[in-house]
Image (spheres, rainbow, N blue to C red):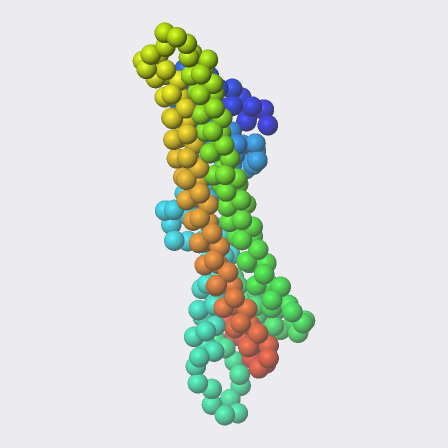
Length: 227
């Protein structure tokens, strides 16, 4: 909270000195600091990962897609009559946990294990998306405040001897703050949309995994993990 207020003060000083781009950037970061606190570091890391890597934010989430593909391949194989219904899967942390869950015989244990791998990454995506969405919606309003201030200053300067040159600085404030507010609003909107895409990908992979696990339970398959 204190850091956000301090950054708002810096943004105000930049605004007074007519460094509008830096002022609006500082306001946007202050908004994120206000809503996230020290977790803003997590958002920065998440943004870098989402934009410059095809991997999910957590290793467990990456295992969901990998294991779903392994199960689809194994379930698509031909099974001979009277042959034991056994799925042989490559070893990873999730396949090992699924094997243990199936051997435990507890109802819904498979789904619980899958959800534990899914939840952490989904929560990280949702946290980043919501905060970036908040910044994207707030920035145009902050730009509008600058626009209104510029117009007020311009109207205050109106008089009998007023000329265009005298009104130009105030008009520039109004237009630039509108421009930068829209710019940063769009930029944060694009960042938030990236996390929407990643969440959809994660949900598709999770649905595939749950569908495969449902088939395993209904048909009483066994899971064998390769050593």
